[in-house]
Image (tube, rainbow, N blue to C red; front, side, top):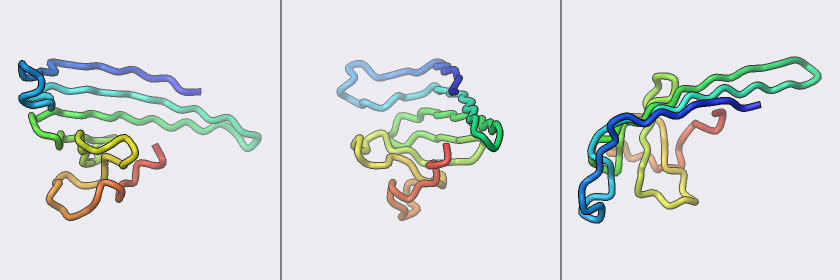
Length: 101
């Protein structure tokens, strides 16, 4: 069972959108709770994901307070995130550790 909510606050884009497709500011917050019931018992996992836009393709993202990089320009098949807060770290988008989410 999955429950959750999403809140968007003050997300601002340029006009026309083609000048800069990335939001200039604002946040999106997603709170999710997953409950897994098995013969061994019930496990519950909760995650809070916050993306704070900064006008670039690399907004700040945290999952339960831990920083991750997200690349808004990554293709759908790429993994557009990895641990760490600097896109200059040399890590590729596929080096993430969000699989347990």
